[in-house]
Length: 617
Image 1 (cartoon, helix red, strand yellow):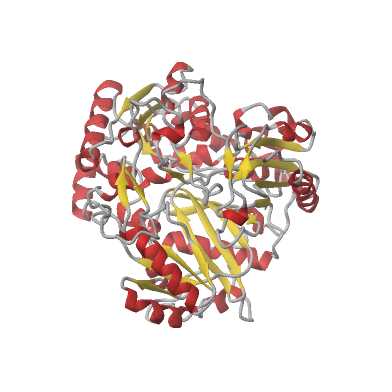
Image 2 (tube, rainbow, N blue to C red; image 1 turned 90 degrees about the horizontal axis):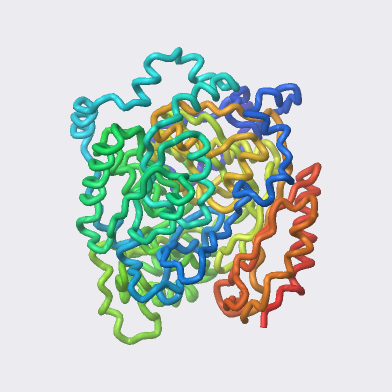
């Protein structure tokens, strides 16, 4: 991006006191003429719409309501008495699409003989993974590896056509992708079924490696995957080695593997290690581990000379006051890693910080591995030294400054170390102090200068972490001091994220991640202006009680401008209102209108109309 004469908002943001003063100034990440970033296109030339993928510009979205394309966040419903096991969606991270380990077998309604520990990737497994290989070890594996079928096919094709950002290039890349053998490590929660349907549509020979009772087995019945490989995760210490053994067997049965990937947050560290062991494309374990560790992310940002919130680790009680004085208030206290069940909390003064630290520290000190998952200890118990999770979870908290201003998602695609696509979605204010998500709109309505600053920091952040290929969901805020990073997720976002990018800009993040996992260059044709104007909302329960029925959505399900309207809580299930704790999402809906402003107004109207009609008793 050409540097303006006066100081930009991003330049001002780079003056953060947390920035490493010895670091070289970061290079501009964007160019005004770059077709990778459609939301920054000044001209938005309508004529270039004809260059968009496979007729997406003419897509009649209303005809797709009943299809899985408009999946939203709703999980699949399986027949009564089914023994299938499914992850839960982290209530803090619907749009981030982060799974979490269910609380118990009983809460999932499974048979007594079904084990969650053996069926789902747990924090215990992640804490037991081996370190990444050294540079020398990786090179040795690559030098002894047989060229994958994908790499062999690409070697005979003209690279300029294969990397063309046009329909011809897209068709050629799809041709190479067809018949590839891709292993998906855990299927994620069942709301992600559309991923495997898309892979099947593209001709991928999909292999899912997951727990013995995973819901993904149902994909064999519909022939959407070629093979399901059961892995018992009960013994966390040996889980990695058993995955390696299973993949070797897949190779012996199906031939050379083309890629190993995941769309599940919990599997990202495992996939990084498996991909390097088999000499396949992927990000290094060091990079994905740094992205998952909140404090490490801040350190990488500072070393790169990028703005980062004031922060301080709290490892002992006697550091609490010093941390508060250093960071200031309001602030946010959070576990740095491995404690997804313990939430992020805002504190407004020193007294609140001290009391919150005491509460969270007790929960973490008493945390236990129960059926393979970490469960927080009770904060009001006198005995807090009986936890057994300390061997793998970091019992350390991070205090960092509260970030004001609007929040956005920046969805990125990296191929061969370069960002080939980026788009911004506005996130609406969360419900504090729980930071519960509400709604979003795309395209963004922020000023172009702010969008450019956010996009540039998003790109610089993934570069600073050393990430090089795949789809990334980056969360940022444009604060009173300029753009600031919240976190980098090393996989596609959840909820409406895939659909938003597909309908607004014509880019399918599922497809692009499949290409990257095989080493096929990603160069998605991108619309020069928005194809649709969208807004969506997830409604939180207004009070605690039990949902009586889900008929309250019928009026909106039939509306021509409503793309989907899904209940997220079944009749007879309990919900929590905001006044009693972390509120429960009860339903979600997405709309389209001729302008983004009209879409925002319409989705807000639906939200207001539903508030008094949801039957909670």
